[in-house]
Image (cartoon, rainbow, N blue to C red; front, side):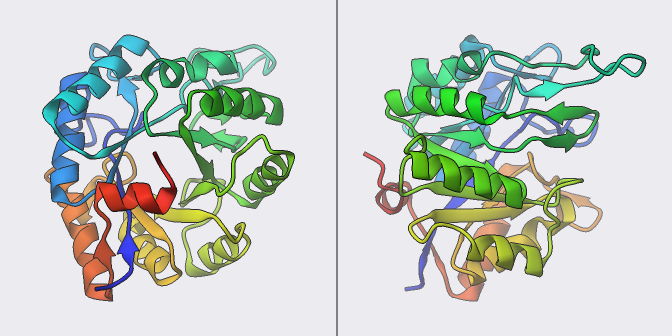
Length: 291
């Protein structure tokens, strides 16, 4: 049996739209069902954003996260819940006066960005370490804000998955690990292919993975057409993997994936054909040191 590999499914995100994929999960019921189906298809972890059902936009509102989590837990699924804390970090500069926040700005106090984590206590939540330009906004995650969020996450007994978008993010992670703000061994997700961040190519993935702390449990994923090539490269380098409609909507060139489960099935197939085997949620918990 090959090396046990954890597959995470990122089922909705906050960027992909229904105009891009008509079956994108939007409501709490749809997001929860997508997570359960991803688990049945072979995902050990479901990475979850919440969306406002009326607008389809990402939201930090507790009631939506609460319904998603309750539905998954009540379904009997053992898929591991990983909640996003990415909302509340975007600043859109006004075109005429860039120090003024334009519409689309979501900047919020760091404690507000993890309030749902404190309340719901999932097994895992993400913690973004990037400050970069993305879409029409500047994503801002200052060291101070990251420290505040990390403290609340730690107090809640939740495992932080550190999302790194470039080499500078990795340096922040190492600094905060050395300070004891972030707990070791770290769980790290390398994000490749976002415009103006680390490109999705073998050399970049090899470099970033080579610089990680020795005890890190890491995964990587690529955006768009790079999703499956990066999945294969991450596995070959000893990492874990991720797929999902948050990152990519196509099962192959020009063909929309039917749903998240189909993306998971293809990811599982690639890992197994390379010689790996999929970690169950119980095995993933053991790998990650989760209670």
